[in-house]
Image 1 (cartoon, rainbow, N blue to C red):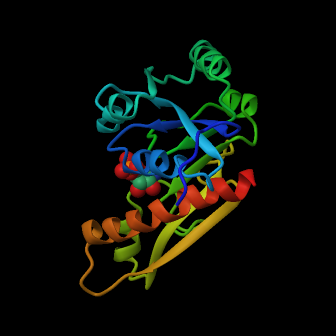
Image 2: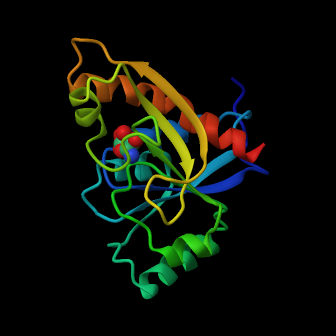
Image 3: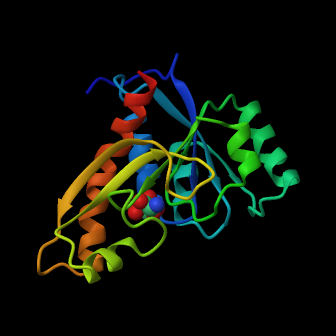
Length: 192
Ligand code: GRF
């Protein structure tokens, strides 16, 4: 794929709390001409997020602010996003629930990736629950963020089969591979 200069692309911020494999993958895709976004800010609510290492590796600014849902913190984060001209927030393993106020202020411009076939299995431990319920399929969903948890409009979804041998670790691995396919594709879909 052709590499891009990053000019005329939509500036995004990726919010993480953990490993950051989706973040790394989004950074990779953002460098291709066909994908109309750049990752300009890595935001984390904790300095323990392993994914913060990609800030140094890819020379992308990072901000770490403990997220407490107060208006004051919301304002602080919104100020940073405005300064950096961020037009889209991509939640990728961000383990905090954004306040209603924050979502309202950034309305229609926050998306999330969730490791289940929404509307099934909102919330945590999706793979354990899907296996326990003897589901035949699991998957992942990219959706808009609204003030109702994991309930906004679906942008893209991808299924994977749950085999008899799967435990929640192997299933999480399989699903994560699909996440890495649909997240950049979903961003491309909404920005084009
Ligand atoms: C992914 O499974 C994502 O769907 C969920 O949290 C996990 C984050 O993984 N919201 P990573 O930090 O991107 O590796």
